[in-house]
Length: 146
Image 1 (cartoon, rainbow, N blue to C red):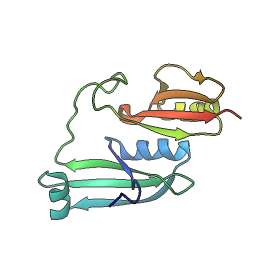
Image 2 (cartoon, rainbow, N blue to C red; image 1 turned 180 degrees about the vertical axis):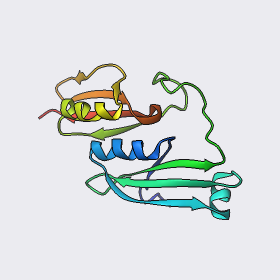
Image 3 (tube, one colour; image 1 turned 45 degrees about the vertical axis):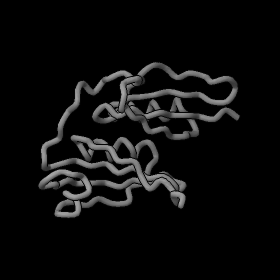
Image 4 (cartoon, helix red, strand yellow; image 1 turned 30 degrees about the vertical axis):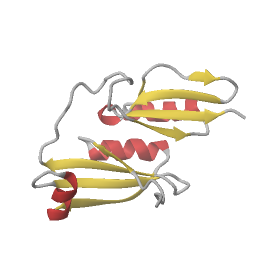
């Protein structure tokens, strides 16, 4: 048996509204928001007393989704500074294909985005960059060169 698809990537955030605004500005579409709690949530997460708010966003093509979660209980645990380098074990990034990397970076800056390095050219194929978004999330951007 094979998997059918990747359904979504989940990211825990402290400021759900700011994270939603960031990813909407990036071009994702908010599918909805909900509260999650109860026995099923506790069993799935291995935590007791789960109460969290989630927002589900999807890419414009409808193929990829991002679930943002803000835990009300149990309390969020920070595992270190939010500006960790990209090569730490367990650090994840979400990569998005964009039409115009410079414009995208400029639009995300008012939402707190900061380049991790710089926009770099990969051969004659792509412009690439990593930026740090809400709660230290590393977001990759790739613009395919025509």
